[in-house]
Image (cartoon, rainbow, N blue to C red; front, side, top):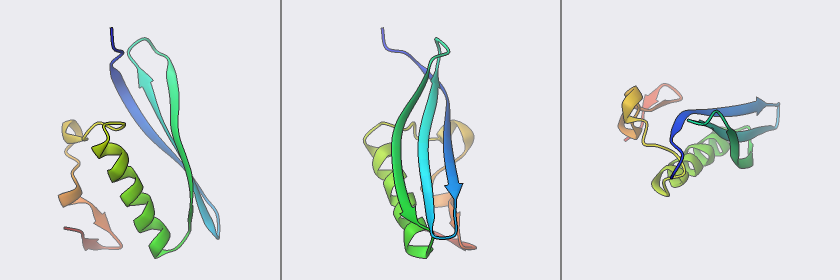
Length: 84
């Protein structure tokens, strides 16, 4: 039986030059999985790369689509501008 994901989190360590990101999830049996890790530059390009990375994971079904929380890429706001 496949375990159901009940919670997902992103841990981001923000430093002057880099963003260290770990993605994790809590399953219905209360176990925790840290399933993705990547380092990005702390710049506009680095943040865009972070967004693209998470979208790629979402499309590969490593992340749920977020619809249960009202989150979608159409509603994402980055640098104060709405992204299409």
